[in-house]
Amino acid sequence: MDSGTLPDSRTEADGSAVIRVLSYNIRSMRDSPVALARVMKRCAPDLVLIQEAPRFFRWRKQLARLARASDLVYLSGGGSAAGPALLCSLRATVERTEDVLLPLTPGLHRRGFATAVVRFGGARLGVVSCHLSLSKEERYAQGGMLLDRVEAMREAGVEHVVAGGDLNERPDGRTFRRLAAALNDAWATRPWGREFTSTPADPHQRIDAILATKGIEILGCGVPADLPEDELRAATDHLPVLAALKVPAAAAEERP
Image (cartoon, rainbow, N blue to C red; front, side, top):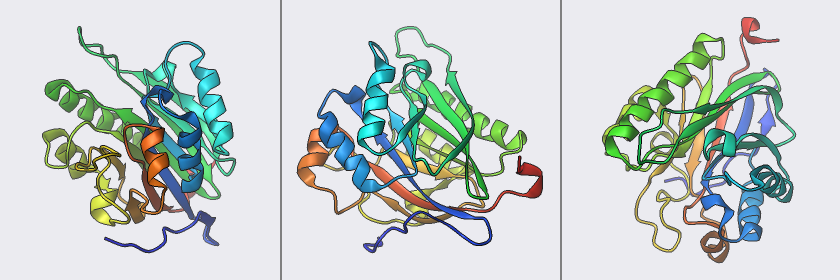
């Protein structure tokens, strides 16, 4: 485990970009929005992959307020994606967004993906935020749908994709292993900070992850060790996962 400093955001001379990606289950902002915004702001992310965003009354306004308080802007998702959402910094240039609703299993919560294609300098990146089911069988199927979504982005010309979220499963689980076989698990590749993401009061398991396609260099990933414990406990019932990724410059055929 690397206890050093996670690299800051930057654009390289060759057009590649170092970006900071945060994945965070915010429990519908039912806890302290002030503490939540402070935690997010201290992480200084370029992209935030949110799970359990507000989905009902005035959910867009709630997400917009959170984004402003965190020095970010709303990108996509929320109620329109059944919970997953995306925020970004002004450093990102947004090409497109799409909210995807997954098949509904009777008796279970609706799930979805918040997706986008963004650029940082000469680097182009597909992004997917997800929150997989508590049901083992449905979760496995949704893991396959996530991989299909990533592959569809790549077939559409987006070479590099990052996906992340609350997987509701530990790394030895069948769905987690399925995802990690196709994508690079950022913590397993370059651990940094702390590992466990649940719960803030008793961290004992890693059920949240950031995953990247091959070609993206993972510079470090984990739960930041320098965040105030009182704010982490007040913010939500998960701990944030922060990764620094180096995304290569887009090939000529990818550039707009």
